[in-house]
Image (cartoon, rainbow, N blue to C red; front, side):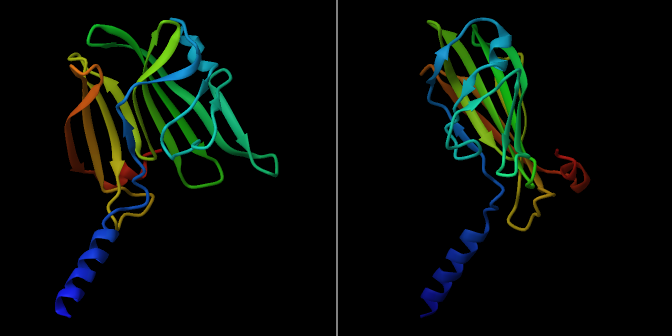
Length: 199
């Protein structure tokens, strides 16, 4: 009987450790997006994207017009506003690629989603080499060693939505298998006032 009680407490403890705000997902297998591509960065402002994560928009393609998209609710007012925040040329181990950051804001809600993609135009098609999505994604950048760094908020089980208590930094590098691999992950506590200004 005591063993069952201890086991039950362990299960309860294990299930309460994860906050529902930690929606971060990473995909390292390359895939091809529908539609042609070119070397023009403006093209990324006017094309259709699909995302592999279960985070908005998870059930349908997203089409940007001049870098923006608005999804309206049944009353005709904006429900989601999405924009292309960045489209930067980057060097992936000698290959020319483009780092995309697409942010979606839930106008009538309390959250949002950020999608990070590293893409490459190959044989007239847009290939996604790396993809990460999550509510707490803060930034993505390439360093001088061709490493991709993604920083994001991490919520502990007792953290309010306003105030994640940690920040994670993940580094990815292009590997011999012709795909990105994670080479490091670090977490550090953040000041509450800093986290509250995460928007």
